[in-house]
Length: 94
Image 1 (spheres, rainbow, N blue to C red):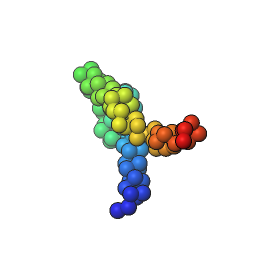
Image 2: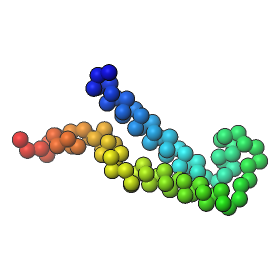
Image 3: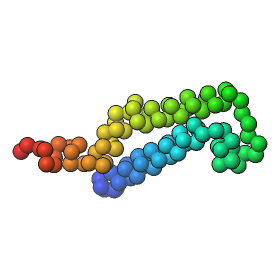
């Protein structure tokens, strides 16, 4: 596999994972009945312990994706602005 193809796969997997994590974090924060309808569970009425667990899980997903993983932040920044992340571009001195 060439380096360009490997980098493309890495970027695709990163962005797909970020989108899926974001969608699930949103579903976890919504009322439980919304998640029940999305996943085909009829008459889904969990207690407050379920809501607590979902809020904690949503916070962990968001925290890992946005705050706690500097490697992920660097990867996303270098994907959006590759010249700035590598030191090239308009501000680089030669």
